[in-house]
Length: 499
Image: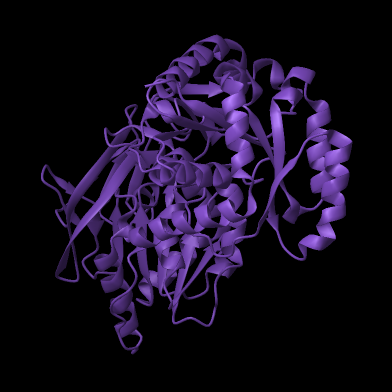
């Protein structure tokens, strides 16, 4: 196989749309018959994805691999940075935790090692695929960081990749952002930029065209496309920047009210995405006791720092309000991963892995105690979930630092090797380490119908398959980008850079 043709997507800032454009190109190249791999050298995110061999990478690269119809590997995201507290993060290398580092230590002391790891992974992909779609991070014009950056122009040079710069017009000031970014690049870096894409456009394109003409004349760079905003695109979000959009998409008049606790170190919040597309579910993220009100279902999602987020629940009054709802038997509560740990009697951190607080009382809603361990569990699993005396085959994945033990056996899921999770005797409180638990369609349908019956509403059957919907969304994104982006020009530039 000849060496792959790479293309790199960079942005004027975070959340400009780099991940979505990269995902679209992964699906497009796959549709055109090219074996394609995504690549992001270094990803900072609390939303993770577990590869088939049980390794942890950034969720965006897992999603992009799905779009490209290939199995995700750690070469696609060799370094994952997971913030644990202010100025400190867990560094995950090839899917396994290395250690926690301060920002300065990582930049200065790990730079050369990280660069070597990135180069090896990039070489592996370039020698194994026909196309490699590379995603940058933040902005390439962060001049205070560029001397030790490992994710933008340095990677483009390693791959000898042409670069497309993406700007988000929805936030305003897109021409200033694009022009300013280009002007702050070094000359050789600017020469590598083959054009720009304006993302999230709403309105009349004819009103934008004078600006496009001016931009091309002023910068000498072509506008490769203006991508109209895609409403209700159901593709997993990479990080908490996207959480703000979750507050405005739902309809409060729907039958089932689902409250998701948004603590500061929330992780893998995409677990709740299947509820977002259900016709009868109103999903809202809450941060205070007043916002919680009286929902039908409360979900405590994953957390990168269970102890600190438990303290947050106490400080905001959310813990007291949740206990009140449970005592009134008006609400079901479901904890996932860190949320599951919070529902127990206590969380113990003897090694200071997450916090300087060694022991904290939990919500005492499930009979478990959790010890935070030095080793991280990362694995894909299957099992049989039993709830309200009804059983379902389920799949999921685990990412957690900690072991939870129950005082008495009342597990939620039976696996081939052991059990997972726990449930209360009154069937109001449930917890599991299985991420993606709500992606299991039959279980989700049953849970929602149970809530409907409790409210005196008729059941709904034949709900959509969420996994099938995801595939449909990749195709919808591909079709949309094909229509609005000059892919022939991009392909020609990729060939020219190869020569």
